[in-house]
Image (cartoon, rainbow, N blue to C red; front, side):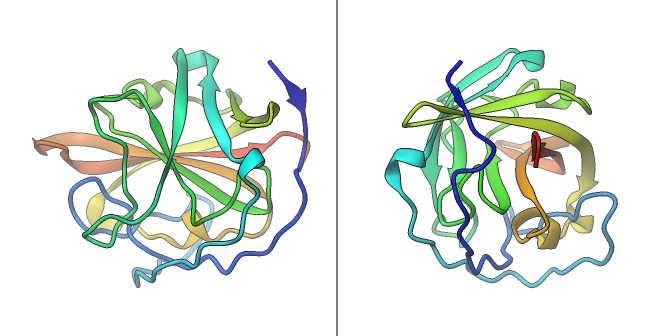
Length: 194
């Protein structure tokens, strides 16, 4: 697929907490093995990143996903933006962690679009992020979790600093109309060899 790399270097980002939603402002959850929730949304500060190392594609063989990555930021509601459900693109929160670096790189897409099969991802699955300069980052799924919206917190999703993570988010549960759903599915993966 491309050149393999465990890390592209180390940078420290002052990533803080905020809500990621497709329709309503609700904080996102901690991984299942961590503790308390923090529901205070704060806007992260964008780090200075090298354009060539930006992610360009995500490939998840087990769920037959091969999608372009689109840089996203904050929408008019103060939430992480999500690519249109008319596309098969996956959004990367580009003011957050660069994939391959220490921290949590966060990707999102609609369950009715690119992440329609994300619920089939399971522990041990490989996820490959291809950078614009041809590096292949191999992430392995550690866990998946579905949370009711009212039980969601952002602490472990955007601000983990104990490894090199990839966190994927989409909607789950009951449709509330349009792009609104009752739950959120989060897939937690870690860079292989880190």
